[in-house]
Length: 395
Ligand code: PLP
Image (cartoon, rainbow, N blue to C red):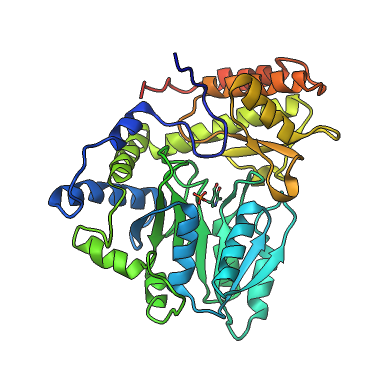
């Protein structure tokens, strides 16, 4: 028998059986009307989840990283300046990608565990009186540290500075699990992927592209070919793709949106908040802390747990995989070894979360960390049983 535990990595997430099946369709002619019928509900549904009516949703056979590349290469020219805070591995990698494309990145170095520093971003924009900065990049949910940034606040800071830069937001580990307001926050390009909140296999870069970003494409000079948004838009307007689409994933995406909307987006977001709070109660009961510096920064999709001095977070993750067949996330970059990460997004219930917390405790005990078995589980149980929602329907 092949036995399988849930995963607790912050993506790819556990997949509902119905979505696995939805991806598994017979080969289809991707230039046929049948493909257009499949594609349309997927993009229309994603637009609702992004919170946009003014933006267009486009998808590439790729991942979130391809979405970053599409955002910057379609709208900017080599030598253009972009402004970004570096406060985790994913904000770092987007900065690195920009530099490889010949962009200048004005980096605001920010402690890992903090969010996008609104005051420093506003000050940098105010100082840029010549408007050399063409785009501001922000990671909504820094998956390396479990930090949520205030994108509405960033938009207010940009407006207060009177700066016309475009705003590009990485919502790879937030979109479809945490509220996202592309139009409301004035986001010009939002980027995500299929393998996190949408609960699908990796393989789609998903972008919401607003009117100001389309306008910037008229003059942008960065090289783009595969990720050309205008080629993609023109083909999709005819119900096709400029190349072969990931048809099965697009079928899965339409089913995913239907599943999320059936639960209700507010209910989906509330479920993630509740699961996250249960995890945080367990972390507190272990005498540990999230890497996120303050409660308002706590992510609802992932908690990076700072491990006690002398303990190695990576060892715990290895041990969980080797001994119990359970996947947690390792610490990345600056926080490698100092944290282990519990992903709590996608297809997850309180009962599943309890099994992850119990496994983490067993690993800590096995590794000789000071922990009382059941302490974190009990704290989460108390929280979950007093906040129990309607049972999830079988999926
Ligand atoms: N941005 C964030 C916040 C992420 O968490 C990830 C991946 O985990 C990425 C970007 C990169 O996405 P991908 O691995 O799908 O290319």
